[in-house]
Image (tube, rainbow, N blue to C red; front, side):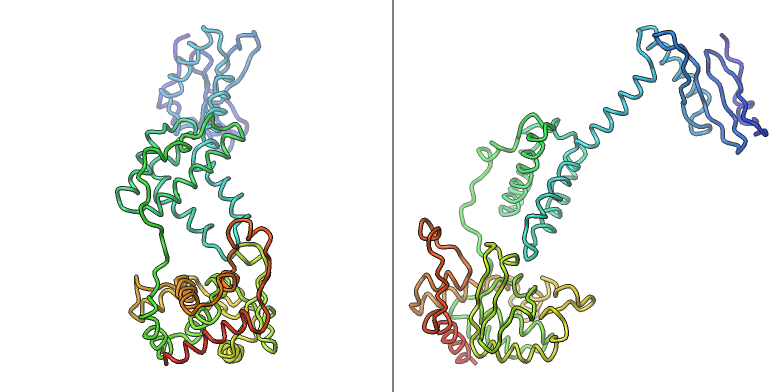
Length: 397
């Protein structure tokens, strides 16, 4: 049937009280609705002989020539016994499948699940997603996960290696490998192209440690902290790290209800510990004095170190690091490095390894770690050790 509509007729079609249709050739029509909307529809017979109406989109988003082109191509499908409506549904299903099976979509699912298992004291939730956004998603994030080749992944990881970011390379490699593990077990990927990628990557030559001062540099740092005129909460936090050797995250999230200052004891619940075991921290008298001072400032809040803008949240993890930068220790010492300093200092003073490892809340290696759960809290053990350490720090002032 020859076409009957013109572009001018389509543009000038006015709404009426009831919807009506302007017909074109080959079953194509423009339906005009009372609210002024105009939409293309196509009447045709399915391969099974039943009539059907297929919407092709609104005018002017879909022009007259676009609608005719679609009908022309759809009629080709009909001649091959393919229903254009079913073809469209299949294309939408494929599109939805591809969108839900992109690497980024699987990464989000993995991250949501993994973050529930990570400790609140860990930065992994934020840092893992930031690493993926920065180093992975721009290259393969929108690709169906099963379509990304091992060579492409090698290029992604090699970029970090070439930049000398070996720790970031290790982390990103591990994150992506775990994302594929999720995809494989949920039948959304046929294999894990990152599983054997390590054979083509450089091996790290040195073990990473948090920057920290040496024992010879320690007295100057202790004096610098004593004279620091910055935020008094931050100053006390940094000093408490030296007096307790806890992790910075464990200190930032500390609550007043965990402290028994009368008995010089801090009990950290298992859910806040990296090893998921409750931890007892003996408090030397210098720490108790400092905590009494701190209680005058934040004792009305649940947290020892509440955030500046929201007291229900802890102080930012960057706050303590920035203090060291202001003191001139950027790249030389970070809050977590304090644990290295304390452990080394205690070791050099001849204290038993078991006492030191327990103070750091480390699990002893091998079979000893499986069967030994002593906390070494007798007065002459860890409490005495940490008191003598605190006295040593006082002598630096």
